Length: 115
Length: 329
Image (cartoon, each protein chain N blue to C red):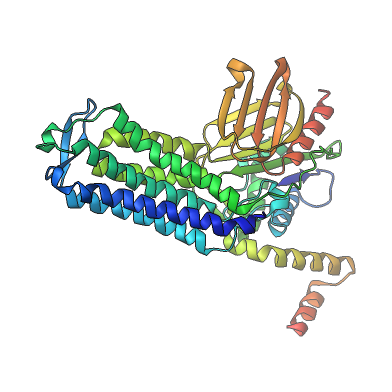
């Protein structure tokens, strides 16, 4: 798994980390049960604040893609491996909708109509 | 003959091995029953003197149970479709799904055979278990049979799978990192057969400890733990250099700072040379080989070299070369 952090990007650093881990899970580069790099090591290697990495991992946990286990660290969840491609597609859809100027309520209305 | 064509023959050979091993567990003690003392010596001290005994039926029952469990594992392997090379394009070396079952199964059955045969021969024609002594040849026999069968299991599994596709062209592309960009790469490599044999060895060592004694169990456990330790590596690379962590606990850790690296490339190992070899400090070269397939090679200062088998080695090498270029190295 390769993570590339661009401090000049408009996307927040934690968002860049979370997005790339999500891509890696969706592409099958990392499998259920695989451990993510330790937050301290990732922070030190990328020059990013530790809390930024922890926030990224927290977002991935909230999305159900990883589990944070004591002494084991961040591990890709079985459910996460199955969900990641769909989560990725949803994010791409939302990015596309926002670029086209749709508001949050308009996006929600569109999705609700199709359900 | 393709892998799928060889599989039925391999299944037959594995089945015949298990039948032979179960016979080796049961027949010697049964045929020699009248010539064995009751109870039999089954624990020995450091100098080979007997320190414990067990009824003949008990020892036969335990060793048969271990042998049957081994046969069941191999039967599960045989019942599955030919191993899928999961993510072969990403991993390069492929990850056969269930070969560990065959290797672990043969190891366990071999362990049952050796822990039945060796005590039987040691106790033969003894008037009492108190007089049964063992020597180094008995300990070698306990170890050689299961580990030899495990090696045979690895060979058989590879024959059944056939060739592994070669997705890694061996070219190292540069990442093209931007001036302010930071990158972090992580990869790993696993040997499922080593992990399976190691875990089976730990379990088997425990059974041996209880059934035969710690004298036989300690060498088995030592080799088993070493196999588990070397069965997997986790590798990371960044502007700081390369880090290698060993085994399920990620310890110990090898850190190679970027300033000690002159260049990085990849190569493809065509045959298994399993294990940790050499020493960076003493010999100037070390290799950590967990499986065949892609490996990341570092050319270090002082004409030293370090090699580690790892998935996606090309990306790791590309990152290191980019960081070297940025640091002026």
